[in-house]
Length: 264
Image 1 (tube, one colour):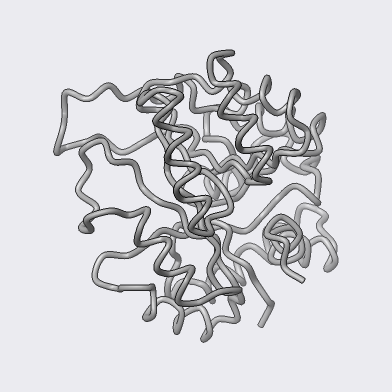
Image 2 (cartoon, rainbow, N blue to C red; image 1 turned 45 degrees about the vertical axis):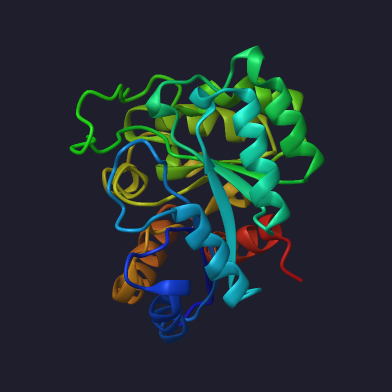
């Protein structure tokens, strides 16, 4: 069974400190995971504060769980900085965002945020592409792309080479080519293969995927749970068919994330 790090996890309602999920990880040789908070814009996540849930999981299981704080630039630079400082001081190592709620990360007004993220040596993890409707708050602005595609991070990624930018779901199905372009040009940009679009682009053998830089691709699942075993088999077969070597598979499942998370 191949050793894995899951770069895309979320806290789970009814599983304080992710104790139950950790047992599933152990069963499937998932040695660590990066847990991300959720936005506060009206979705019902079944928990009072997902960001605090991330903190609790990280504190309970250091070196197994690492965490990011979910931020919304629409709340303004000052409030975003306050949240980054608050949760950075609590041990979270990055920020998670959903630009679909209405902001463009490329805008110059957000430069103070990037400076703070860089100063704290935090990573950036962004949802890209489609986002589920907000049934609890259907009037809320949601943009399928808007700022939620890799090219909308080109400016901060160029300016801040010391920040690692990770695009979830391979940058979104419709904009996966942006992922291929940025990762081929900027060494501080990465992508995970999290379902749905992250897996969909590979299931459909879309053009250009064979050229993906091997050191900038990571395994993420959005909480695969007991599906980890099937994931092992599917991704190993698919990537091997695309010319990935056994060493490339090690990079994908484990080594790239290990480096990003600073695991000794």
